[in-house]
Image 1: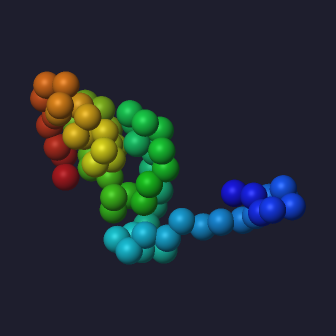
Image 2: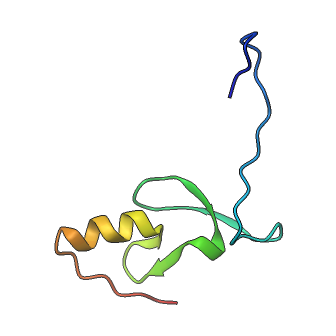
Length: 67
């Protein structure tokens, strides 16, 4: 994120569902970083975000949740 002077600005993303102590993991499909509480563990693919789960299911993929 940059300000009007084109200098980098530190920004933090806050979500209502995550806790500051949550571990962070990357979604195995889109590679975005999420708090562990916002991801779902799938048997074959690992951690997936909600958006990617919907996309995979729309393609007819059979997902096996682990949590």
